[in-house]
Image 1 (spheres, rainbow, N blue to C red):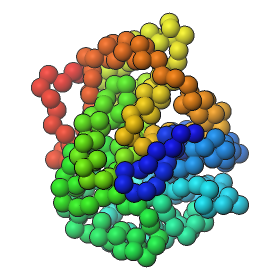
Image 2: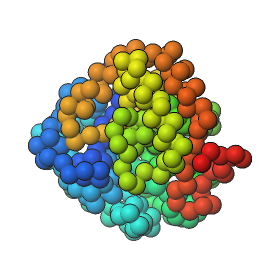
Image 3: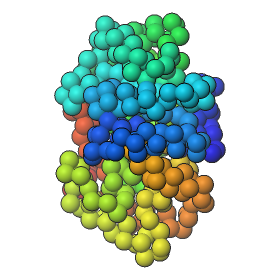
Length: 318
């Protein structure tokens, strides 16, 4: 699988990476054997960067990764986890919890270091704490060799600009913001490039919005957004293409977005995605789909504290 440099970090990641949130049963109950096989399948196919968090399954994802990675040489894969979010409404970005969280994650996964460590969903807290307390504590762990690269993750674009104005980062992870429907992450690329920050994209399907699957009850898409995405999926189907294939291929096509994280506890899905990643992107079909989605281009929702979010543009579609 093609690999790209992660900013100026010197680290290379595959264009498609394995997201382990499904191992924590975040979206559905999973079969244990399938979950473990999905990790090995991803590694066999070249998806050798794995992204997880103690939030996923409240530690279950990290524990299952520990089992799945037993016997796998540590230098054959790259591993990233997060800290700060531990339940839906439980956040703790204190320096004390930073140290505790990393040590627990290392123990769960049976490793002695992390290649990437991200402060998770920081839009839910006062960003001054991230700058003044959390990141300095993580940098100390980096000096100790427990962590190689340090960064932040979250939904609003505003959080990245705010933190980068006050602190140095090695890497950022953004989700739902470089898809067929929303390309706001691309607008952030010049700033990230100038600061030498590596970019990890995630969630090319926008939580099933850009698939033929039924949306989960918690999805925040409005009726209009759902309708236009359904029209786009039906258009792709008439062309003999699954919109999920187009969505995944589009999300890995930007050369400055090093990798796109996508995950499943079903190894057959992992095989399908790796196959799609190896196929050429139909640019004509992309143009047609983006034309259908034009009325909701860059639609987004509010996540976390209002002050940490991007301003809604005038005339935002409902």
